[in-house]
Image (cartoon, rainbow, N blue to C red; front, side, top):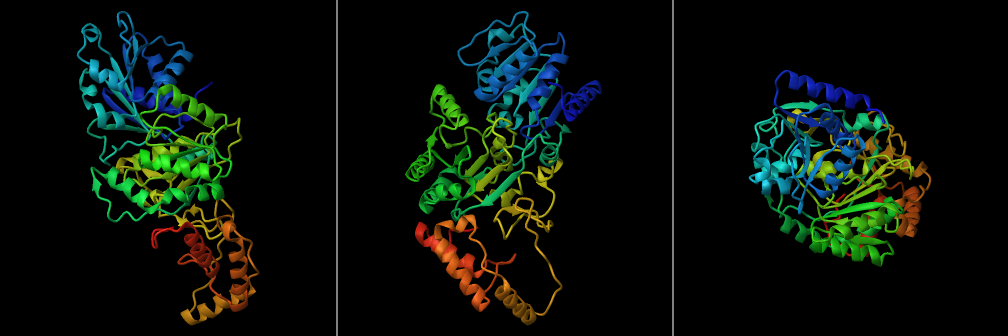
Length: 468
């Protein structure tokens, strides 16, 4: 398969920087842009030079090994339980954990790389930064989010950055699918402390368990993602297991896996999700990086994070297109307010400024309840157009709104209000008769408010924690 145009450009830029004697280069490409393909071709272009290719997880390890073999590049696999001989070998594919433990072994006494390629550099810095200091050789670090998990820059490690296309550009060219984000109820996080740039994990999970959010997660999945292959990210093992129980009670096929799940069982669960034998696979931070399961077309975030790296990497698991399943878009159900905190997943970002997104915060579409850019008059998801008229005095505006409400016919029941359809119909009839408030960009309408209160009473949530 030929390179995409931007992949050829990235390879040329990296080689040009090496020719100009820059020794530490950071390659930024969104999830699904083909960073591994670029890196594998750099290995092939290295010729007789020795290359050490470091990856952080077993999933990425296997995928990279397959791509190296597909290009006919012979390589040695260095992972747990393997003690290969490096004599006469030019390429070594190593797990970062294994390499950190064996960096002083005899196998490296007579073998040292001329080029070090590090996948998911942001993760390696957090875990095994000493790996970068073993050899004095050029380094190519790769990541979709060139900021550490604590929000700090990677500029002190790799000061020269090669920036790939944005997610929006890849979506426009058909390399990634559009993302539709729906906000959903989340707990009150004001009392959750922030440490090292993110919420304290134990207190965050406690907040989710106390608010019993997991009991209504299936309801929102049925509204927005019924029948979609879904990966659900939870805050902890206990909340993930309770969420699975809630899914099963609602007739939804779901499984839970975590770091203690054997590798074989984990692979079997992924295969069941790929074949759609289950609907939802709940996990705790396992698939933030490296998972290549293109059939997934829904991501449910049942966690909140201050780390844009964790947010973007999690959602990125479902952005790849899937011709076999004819995936049209990715549905993101956000139970953590992450899209408002970090901006839309497909927003343009300035990675020289720690990934700050360019543009205004998203707003809710009044027709489909999905996030959209504030400057777009037409919703890109449902094509509803918001009409804006001239400004009037408050009294005249109130009279005008009342007249518009009376002349607006009974609206069809939206998806989210189907469980209380009767309340919606009755409220719409009262609204039309008396001219009660229609929804606008500042507040909900009469019918929306009544239905949400009815849903809240049915879910038995704590007042004030059903925050859209």
